Length: 349
Image (cartoon, rainbow, N blue to C red; front, side, top):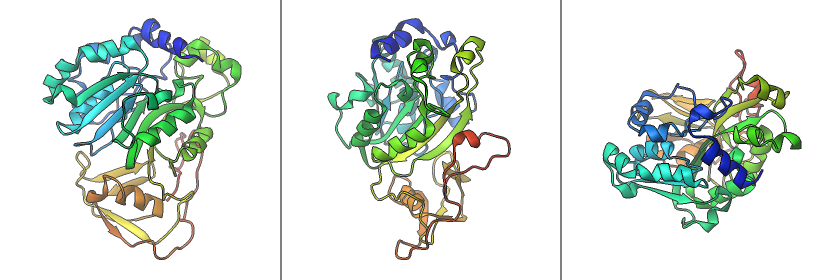
């Protein structure tokens, strides 16, 4: 699928989220209260052109430098700008001029609404597959986000490699996207409507994990996922028998991460100090770490907490001096097998 087809779909065919033909690019309403308060202050013109499929606002963002890949009209950029504060910055990249026009038209409005300088936010026209062509310094971002956009990219490997290049050591890519339960057939991949609706460009979930590791992101962690229902009979027939889901992953730029979760007898204690998370810290869908409780972790999880911005919020027990083999219960599973009522949370550790 060529860039011009996607650009036409999001720049001209879609004038608001009401024009979408499926629910793939729609975020459910179960966002946390602190984020709802921020989103409620975003301009309506920006909100009506939102096409995301998940929540991409991780915690502890004060002072962070964030890059949004495929920012569209800027809803997530402006929400994140409120969270990073006056000492942080948020940069948006998008290939659709019509979307960027809407985003830029409301910079003054949001600077006033959130009480930060207009320079807190900037927008770049460009392709997420060609990040090296933009005026962005390698290793300059703490966090890279993306909301239901990588599935639209023509070269997903290049997107992930480019993101890895722009992240600081210990930084993370925190993003939502659509995934398929098998590889998408060529004929379906060439369907412009299904592609624009974030379906036929979706990666097979296991191919994504391999791709992420190849790009330098060891041990990808799934944070949330939900099954997608097409709710359009004509399009349902065109995608059958494939199934799709929306998932949020976090990928850390930590070169010492191991291929599997190894046990070194380590543990962490969460202090309860991350803003908006006083009772527990959620690293991923199988690490909900309660405040004050000793929580055994594998070596990879230890590094994801000790060698990132989260270190000040934890006490750390143990080291890497003694290896006890694989961490008990370590092993991956398809997210499509983890969507049922009685499914286990899966993953490692």
